[in-house]
Length: 434
Image (cartoon, rainbow, N blue to C red; front, side, top):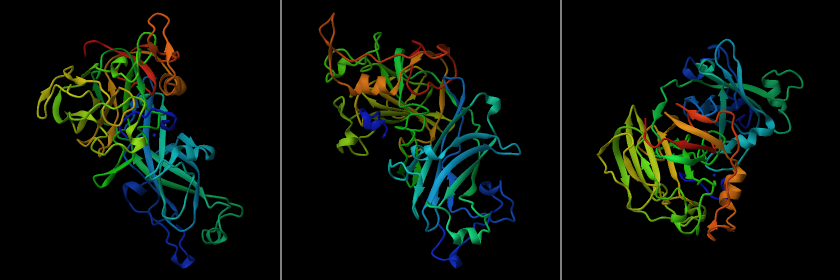
């Protein structure tokens, strides 16, 4: 849900007869603008974009697209998805991204589950998670259009090939679906929510699945409020997450750090009534948590322009602001804790298009300034730094020490401006916000 999961499992209609066949008549609308108004295209797998993509500049200097296709099987054959292609809309139709057959299941999730699928049975729906980047702002297209290659397992049945007068031997249909205008809104530039060095952007944009695939039916609609969420955990100079008994939250270097306002705004929600969780136990995996408890102690700040900053898992009794209070950039909001659906002390942070932490559209954001120190890997962070809880005895102190997290080099270390730290990057935030 809203928290970082600790453990290996975290990595979280042709109808019955020809007479009943209904061909899809294209209309003069946003969703059919790419097709001629006087044609009929049979599209057994229908698709739409869950939320128009908002490109964001990442800490690699590229502009990232993160969004989802909702696809549904609209007839009574099982349809297999063989590929998904994303093109820049317009005359050039430049291919921007392709999910090939062998990668379809890894990027497609049956609606309401985490089950990976590459085919849809009748009336089933799924989300295809699309992530790609372009090299420059000039390369961002105005529109996107999607092409799906679909077939019936074992090949297209004769009733379809005959009806549609397909060439002999054609094995699949190609659908043009879900045209969408790219949302070119100004991405909000923020001061940091934390200060100092050694902050790891866990479960972040754009290749982690923990947050970006957290689709939830809330308030009557399907939302991914955590699309660009980051779980911030802190390591010390030796890149250890804790020194001392890890069951003692004070042994963790992130615990108790100041959590700061990323911009001027109005506090619209304050919850400070939950106790800390035990490290290494994710409550949602054991069923020991309710929907109300998932965020733990948290604060939501309205930033204006329909954007809200969300801070989760704060330390009990630490929140320094009240609902209705106006805050200034850099103001102390509370302390980093381990409340809610969390297995290790961290700050969950994201920006959303609404005041509901789970029932809002997740939006990208950038930080005005930070220093990129390098990055770590899934294995080094989760399997070694967190999952492997076999203590090591420090030569100097005799204390239990967490295993050091590997720091890998990146080509653009140093000061970065107006960028979003990408997944598993390690950053240093300035002591005073700009």
